[in-house]
Image (cartoon, rainbow, N blue to C red; front, side, top):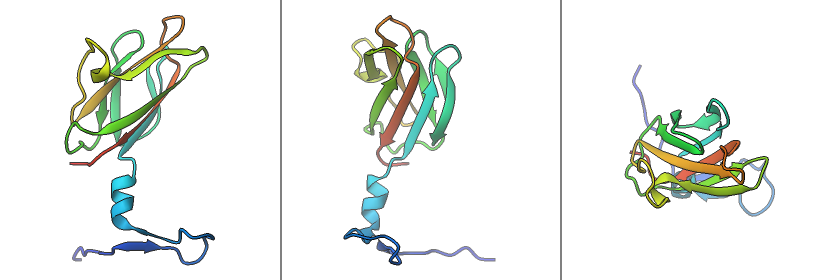
Length: 136
């Protein structure tokens, strides 16, 4: 059996969706979609709760998670992300590791790190990260 290719430039709904957004250019879908996301518990043993394109993460100390490794690498380290810490106390600090002054590790095509502390100086509880950029 031979493998084939399906090529198309626009996705269009069959009429089940109401409103004006019934079609979209495929470039928008590819370039505007998250390439990776992860929801993880940081307290005690760090655990991935749910994810896409994340293979593992490592506890690097209080409030620190590095590396968070991609299953499929990014094209370059210029990807962007959004990081949200959902803690029981107010979050004192959250950041990607290479944006933190004197930070540990670095953002690369294969991984990134985060800091998440609550106001009492302990681990942020539940953390959400979404990554946008190009896959390799």
